[in-house]
Length: 286
Image (tube, rainbow, N blue to C red; front, side, top):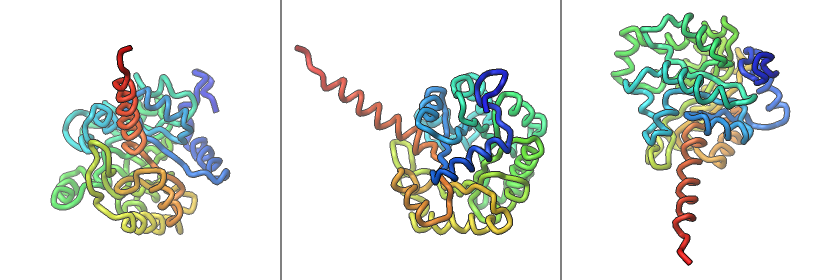
């Protein structure tokens, strides 16, 4: 529904976003959510028909020519960057698609209830937990968990968002994380199977095979669907990169769709700019 104050869609309520996604599934269409790091990306992602646009700090690094994992590092204030992209680049140009804000829920400097109020006031229709400690493992993950920057903080953030009527679409890497998120009201679960392969700044080899991605995605779905059958399930990352890859995931799991950031925004720019520049450079003087 258009916002009566702006004539545009955002912000939507939690239920309004759910209804839009349900309408997509009722048409037997896959849900496609896309990360956007710039306004022009968001504008044309919307034109392409995406169901959700997600903004997080990795988008800025990605569109500056750096690997998306830069968004996990101490190269800036992740929450401030997401808000800035939303306020000045994406929300002013998106006409109808719900825009979701990436929130670094473990940031110990934030009063999260206060920050989520700002997110909502800005015009975002929901939240996403990025940067996420779900994709950190090993000794460093244990240190984060033991020193007050645990994944549970991200879960708590999503619980607050639910109380504030914000839609939530969340990254998880394990079935138990998916259950934690679903239990506090997460609307959509993204099975994150690793950094996206391919292109100039993606990883060169997947951290898992396509068979592994299928198995891990379905395990996450199975863990949630019995107790939360109304959850939306999305795939992301690793070897799942192209529309053909997503077709495989949709055929072999019960996923409802796909979240693409590098796969849509970066890959689209890399190849199209290269090809277009080559066409210009092929011109000769008469």
